[in-house]
Length: 135
Image (cartoon, rainbow, N blue to C red):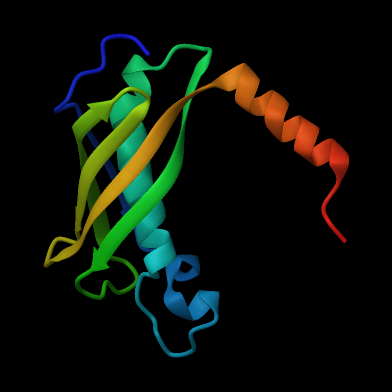
């Protein structure tokens, strides 16, 4: 990872689609952005902040997300998630993340990611996959 510093920022924007609604994930009648979709958007903002700093042998993996889902967002609204890298402890990266839907702040979160060696990580995944899933 080349030159990353505390304070780097990332931002992503997405329009809430039908498939993003809680009702699409088995919560009938709850036609608002699901918490799962919102968490994904928050994670993407963190990834956006890191993109300029990752080399071909680098990648990050999410380890923890603590999110407050503050307000509902209907289909068709545009949601913007913003991330700030608050802390670097070795390979551990701690982000403060928030999201807004144009009307309300809809989320605030802390997200922890770890910088990993990409070839080594993929090797470990392949070895686990080769063993097969437990019966």
